[in-house]
Length: 72
Image (cartoon, rainbow, N blue to C red; front, side, top):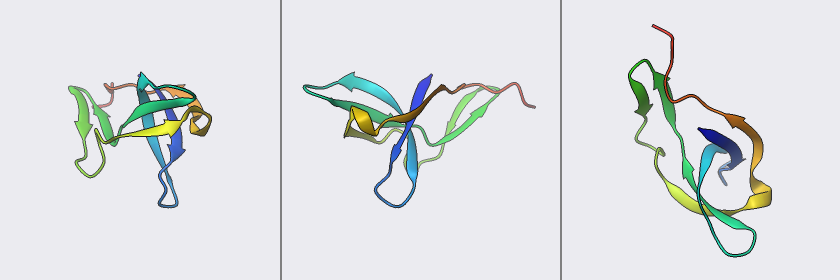
């Protein structure tokens, strides 16, 4: 999954993926909050799945995040 960091507005950041492109320089993003396990993504209910709009220039630290883990 291609993800980025973006400010949370609460003093930290969220790990997000782009859900869809919007008009102008904005995108709708989905928050990834949880951990990768051997059977797939384990969401933590506080923020996982939350969506919001953000300016594309607020997306930093582009990387690939695995949704599965080889750890046992």
